[in-house]
Length: 592
Image (cartoon, rainbow, N blue to C red; front, side, top):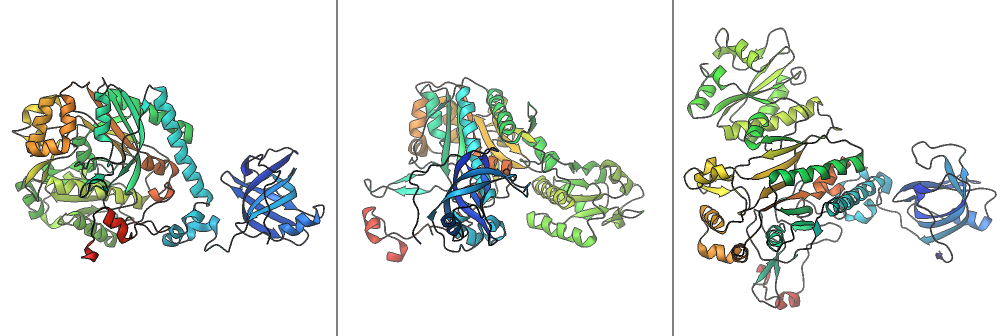
């Protein structure tokens, strides 16, 4: 088939933006569906905005009509014609009440039969879709997601520009510094045996920009982390990175709240009530068993240690004697859904998290069924039900152990039960600030305290005295932004005092040599004075994922990686030839 050209024709409208008038228009796109009815031909033409119907009938020029009969799915077309009212309206389409009576049709490119139907690619297995990602990206749902992500980026820039921020790019190849995950390394040809690292975040550079006097910085920064993947994690991602001088935590949080309010209103028409709720890390763990809790439903964790401490049940007794606790969640109206078999699945899940088991009270009939009933005294069951507001129809799940086991176990079960019962409002957006994060966490394997955050995070002033004597009691001027159980962002105030920074490095077990090698240039910068500053990094991909109602980052990233960090379409990573390796002074294990 001889292909046409665009000669003397240019697009006047996108498909879904064709006006409801009788004017002549020119549209371009892909053939989504062709219906050849003999004396009538209809072609649904698709572009990134939607679909419009092209019509060919007895009044159409015969050469144009015959050309329309050659069109197949995914052909690239350009059509000129007059807008006309459709006889049968399609209310599913924005242009469902009009069609274009075509007088000039151009076939610009032909397509082989695709490996799957583009508009139904949601029903195709992921591996096939990712191999032909360029086809899958034609799917209207994915196109809508990618466009929404673009809108998030656009509004981000507009909002922060309007609030006095400067967009400044930081290096993509930098010094390898410890930031919590493995670096992606880039070998240097000019400096044999030495490596750049791709940035896990622009953390050090944005702090240096504050030292340099650029008091409000913003960047849509590309970040790279060599870590295990999951639905809400990719090895490369985009971060809305910001830093502010002469502010405190409330100033930074307030600025971000204004951004969130505007973003959700402009893109989704959703009103976010400000100020956002704030709870401490300790409170989040006590109530929800998670530092990124979903607050769209109840089932909060309740401490019943005092209620059950005298019950002669070895599981409860040992937990209390070992410094642990006994806690419960009341899964309201869960008894009918959770049969004994279903509860057994919850028990196995709890064991998978680290719990030794799970006790329960299931009140489905007139009398509650209690898994530890034989150990109870006369009023014990009544007291437990009273403590957790247990009523007929409820399921009470109880875990007894050290808090580090009990809290995350019940926190996970809380979410599982809520999804199973369908009590989560998917159209509700509960933002939450988690504040007063612990500064250190105990490393069981190495039996030492390690930093929960990067080493430039400022401790709370009232905790400074505990740095050496009581690390568990040190809280950080750090916070997370959480939405519906997903962590969107972390932020903190930064250490700017040279002496305190040295003390923090020492508390983390770094030697003077390690400090100089890894952070010497930043430490030196502080010797020349620095304004007080802090900042955040907001996950643009995760934010877009939630706003699109998607289940995976793959649905908002144009060319994503899969579980093993490979990209199926281009088959990367891939081997390189020996000459390239020799230039970089690299020898692989296979070559030895």
